[in-house]
Image (tube, rainbow over all chains, first blue to last red; front, top):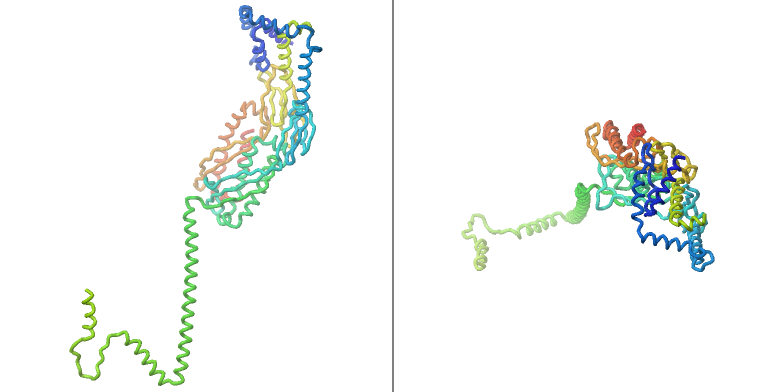
Length: 359
Length: 170
């Protein structure tokens, strides 16, 4: 009761001074109640002051405005019946109708769902197509795209996103998460920041899975397995948050050793390739040698065959051939009989002579 | 009545506006994503749309409510799952290895009244939770050898952090 008395006094105070009623009454609605026992209306001194200022401040311009506005409202006959009045009325009716139509008919595109809240409380979810709801301040519809698969990229080629593998190595990993909304009302009402949550959950799940794999597995053929495990783990965590999010898949785009040791890794790969090529070369050389040896052996067999047919002749012939090969490259002095001493080394003079004209 | 309106249009307009504000102010709309503590002259008296585990969305709670205008105020508190993210920091494990740890926690305010009394606002709550999370993570990791943090025991570590965080926060 006290409150209403307070209001009455307040209203009277407001209307007594005819200045700026809009400004002061606008503030009243949201004015917080003062703390303790004083209450929001415990301000009579201020009001008194205002009232004393009031009459002096009510200027002729204000009086004229009042008179005019009074004439506008209470002039001749009011608005029903008057042409301009009816236009205004029709315009208002038209606006209301348009507003009703626009806010109560909703067309939901395929792949979308409309979440209807009635005075803030969730009431239903609209499927694709055209549906009717109550007009705007009562029912509000929020359209949510559920089929559209969104993707979040985590880590990239430029920045390092290091993770610890099970064999205590670091791996620089970049991956993307594809997800869509399974239950729009949960998505809207359960998580404060769904996208961030998905990101952090993805990172957490990825680290957990990577920490159970070795570096070679993570870089090599176990990627598919890792992706599947991360997806399953993320879905579990997100379901526990009741997020209404469906994880469609994880794609590991890059799994490299960290930059600092990447060069070393490349060198190792290069060295491994070198090793392989050396082995190949060696194999080829061995084949070549074997083939030549086999050829030589075959030739020797042939010669031996001939030798067996006529040992003496062949032996002599072979001796001659060998001596011919050997002696043709050697300086030789042929001495016919024993006891003769050569006095002039003719061949050496012959050899040194052609050099002189060249100078 | 009509005469009164004609003679004092401004007074009528002000009166109407005032009435509108009062009426709108006394029937607040509580959205699904919020809980509210009704405070009458600084003293919490009611809780609107309180979170209860397992209750489906759209059950009683959110929607139109009432309050005494001017006397009661609503303190809005988020009903959704909120998060607190810890800055990456270095932690020593039992075998003297330095670990770079980045942790996050997700929480939901299940007792808005207690939260309002202890922390007042959500920002302050997050501020208070962050150091608690940091120290709990450090405590827990400090008890473990490095190898235990890899592989299956990891989950146990996270569960321990969660239970001790719950114990401290409530």
